Image 1 (cartoon, one colour):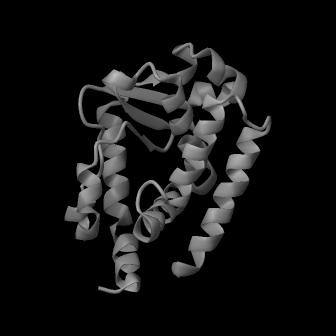
Image 2: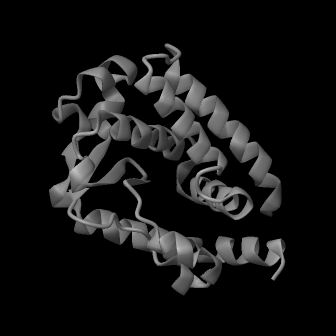
Length: 183
């Protein structure tokens, strides 16, 4: 299959992925905790309060929920479904494995994704993320690369003061590189 076919199928799968995300968020709504209520001191110095009030986390015992995209017409992504992710973000809510729930660094990383989702919106985020996975794999996909690089800066106490603006600008640049692939 050629890349254009995969991109077309990925675009066609968006409604099913969106529905899965909405169902997953609804099923876990009662388990969400606002980030502001967790009490991580450094997150409060890096991210604005309104983000920490809006963003939520769900702690899960075991595997974090990942959409069954291989059954949505994209068998190329089956390996992703089996990956043991530490955390994953959907819109303004992220899921973390129970044993990593106290990792402020992991929460920082997932909050980068919350900002990315907010900047692009659901469909653009999913398209940009999917293209990144197709071209570069998980760790080297541009949206993940950004989150990991900033997480390293967070871990070293070496972040720019305008972190939100930086994430938004870089996220838009990633989308600008992906947008021409979609009509």
